[in-house]
Amino acid sequence: MQINFESEKPIFAQLADWLSDSIISGAIKEGEQIPSTTEMSVQLKINPATALKGVNMLVDKGIIYKKRGLGMFVSEGAVEKLKKERQSDFFEQYIQKMLDEAQKLGLTKKNIVEMIERG
Amino acid sequence: MRGIELKNLTKYYKDTAALNDVSLTIEYGKIYGLLGRNGAGKSTMVNLISNRIFATSGEIFIDGEPSVENDSALRKVFTMSEHNLLPMSKKFKQAVKLTKEFYPDFDEQYALGLAAKFELDINKKLVGLSTGYSSISKLILALASGADYVFFDEPVLGLDANHRELFYKELIERYTETGSTYIISTHLIDECASIIERAIIIDKGRLIVSDDTESIMAGSYTVTGAAELVDRYTAGKHVIGSSVVGGIKSAYVKGKPENVPQGLEISKASLQSLFIQMTNDQYIGG
Image (cartoon, rainbow over the protein chains, first blue to last red):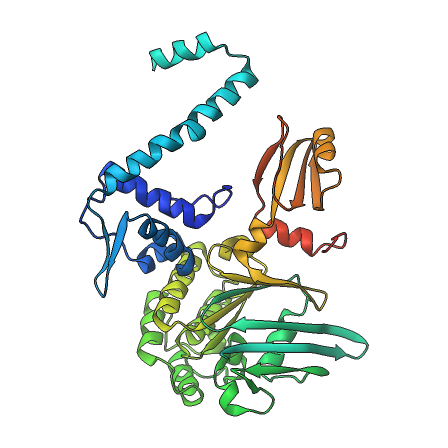
C-alpha cells in the first residue's frame, strides 16, 4: 500500500480505506488477524497514533475487533457490512464526479450510457 | 504533569534575540517536529532545554521541575549534540560505554544491534567517521539513550536514501516500544511530516505555531487555477501566501474550501509548503 500524502483525504482515513479494500477483496479474510499498528506504521512510515486512529475507525464500525493481548481481527460479516456502506457511497464518490467531468467535456446523457454499455 | 514546559523563554546574544518570549509545552509520549529555517532558534531552544546555555529570562520545567542545574531532571533529556562532548579519539563501542555512564537506562544491546543494521564499524574512532556515519553514530546513541525526551538535530544529515528509511522505521519502532518523547529538529519537513504527531514552528526566535500536525494541515488548503479565477475566489479570504507559474496561480488559504467554482482545484497543502509560507517575510499571521 502507498499513502498519498498529497491527497485531500487524511492519512488515517486512507489507511482505513486500504484495510477495507483488503477485506472486501478477501486479501484479509473474516476471522483473520490484521497487521499490528506498529507493523503498519513502520511499513508506511506514519505515526503510530495515526495508524491507530485508522484502525479504530473500523473498530467503531464493528468491522474489526480487538482481542486483548492477541491483536486485531476481522469480524464475521465484515465484508457484507463494508459492501453495503460502499454501495451507498457509490453515487457521491463515482457517479456525481463522473457527471461533473462529463459536463465539463460536453458529453451528453446518451454518450455516457453508450460508454457504460461498452464497458 | 509529565512534559517539558517553556515559560516566556528568551535568550539574547548581545542585542539579538535568538529566542523571544517562547511559551509552549512538549507533551510526554509524542513525536514532535521542531521546524524552523536556519537561524530560527531551534538549536538555541534545544541547548536551553538541555541546560547547555542559560536563558536571559523565562523558565523551563521538566516533568514539573525547574531544569536549571537540576541533574535528575536533565538526565531525562538526551540531545544528539551530547555526542560532541565525547572524546573524538574514542571508538564507537567506547562511546557506547561512556554514554551508559551518564544515562543509566541506555540500552547497550540495542545500540550495538542498530550499529550492525546500519553497518557502522564499532571499532572505528569517532574522528574517522564520514559525515553520514558520524550522523548515524549520533542517532544510534540518541535512540538507545533510554531518556524520556530525545532531541534529534537534523538526524538524516548526510545519510543516503536507504539509511534515511531505516532511521525513520527504527524511530517508529523504538517509539512504540519505549513510549518516550522524540523531537526531530529539521528543515527536511516532507520526509518526516507523516511521522510527527505535533509540530512546533519557530521563526526568527518567535513561536509561530505549536499544534497537532493534522490540525495545522486541516486548517488550510491550496487552491489552484487561472490567476484571475483564484484571485476572485480568494477575495476576502485569509490567504497565507501564493505562487504563480505562467498564468496558473496557487494560493494557500486558511479555513475550509466553500462553494468552489468550476475550473479551480482544491488540494491539501503539505506541511512543507505551509511551513515555507509561514516562515517567509510576507507571512500574514493570525
